[in-house]
Amino acid sequence: KAGVTQTPRYLIKTRGQQVTLSCSPISGHRSVSWYQQTPGQGLQFLFEYFSETQRNKGNFPGRFSGRQFSNSRSEMNVSTLELGDSALYLCASRAGGSSTYEQYFGPGTRLTVT
Amino acid sequence: EDQVTQSPEALRLQEGESSSLNCSYTVSGLRGLFWYRQDPGKGPEFLFTLYSAGEEKEKERLKATLTKKESFLHITAPKPEDSATYLCAVPKPGGYQKVTFGTGTKLQVIP
Image (cartoon, rainbow over all chains, first blue to last red; front, top):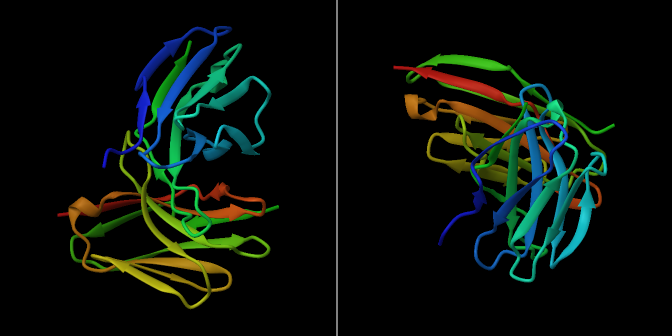
């Protein structure tokens, strides 16, 4: 079974631009979560989508948004990029059933804002 | 405020030298605790979920245990390929995906 895939793997953007990151979960998984990882803050939860609905949201500004499609693929968008948005953005998928809580991470998208 | 604290921040072991990593948490109504391994430039790899105090789980040279206030990841006779950052995480009330991660323990195993 293929794992979680994320595209692109690396991205360089300029301050003020916007960016869209993509995540394809493991086949059959309906829950997708997004995390930001930085050396200073570690892994921080952004939001979770399940069956195209946002179920949970972390403490990030409104510039960070996401969506999920009917095939469970998810996109994350960051508008008006700031230097501090430079990070590894990770997507994680989960089956979504009440008895399965393990989530599986993709390789991440390394975003650099200059 | 929910907190997850991991210690030590970094650990250097000789191959074969067993040790333990600690994850302490202050979360009301613990609903589980996760352990992950992360290699440089990669996403975290799921290792274990522990649900209740007294529970233990093993995988190769790793054994995770859970008490009411902390979890330990015991590494027995480690090998260089065990070198990685080990993360623990605790779900917040309201959603298992809204988890709080610790900052990790960076383990280096020297041949």
